[in-house]
Length: 117
Length: 117
Image (cartoon, rainbow over all chains, first blue to last red; front, side, top):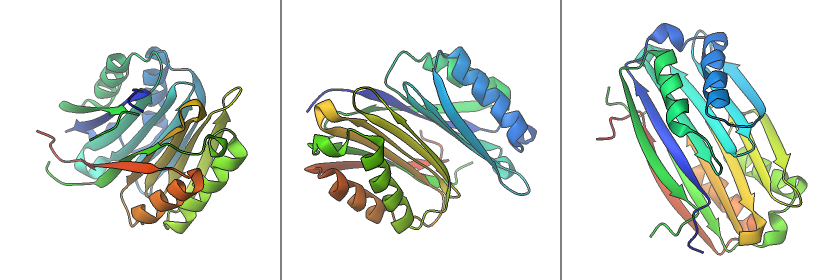
């Protein structure tokens, strides 16, 4: 097997505005906007509020999945996006970066399905 | 910021038994067993059945998330596990590999939160 079945994007959002990372209502709004505007077909999503602050969210899309985990105390959010279809990944990352007011977005792209060695 | 906030495991299960990858009922059973036995704290999960066969599943855990996507036509499944807590990752991978009867499990471990450059 040496096919590629999708691309997995791992993104570190660094030096964010911590206020944007604290609560589900704020993170959810940006996350869903990123999914919609990148042409993902949303199937289901779920968010969890950590106390006092911090958010985790996962979203199943027809093209695979998105996830977000935030650490407001460190102005940091971790995003991943596994895409087997026609997702506008740059748009998703840009919307999240803008929404979180991140100074930097560090992106790793991992090819899934290939033999890795 | 140069801390590590978690480890992200990307696993390719290769040359699986396709019968084990086709339907939600089978994939879900193995996936939940992997989560429970690796000491994950399950918050929510959701699975989608592709027609005629193929499954996507996501699970939010207190320690971050698990996801699975299967391609029975290619005897292939893609698993990812983002762990910020005390997850027994080897156990999770082993249970999935056994359950899918995979000939190979190729594991990549990505450190999340560090500056990647």
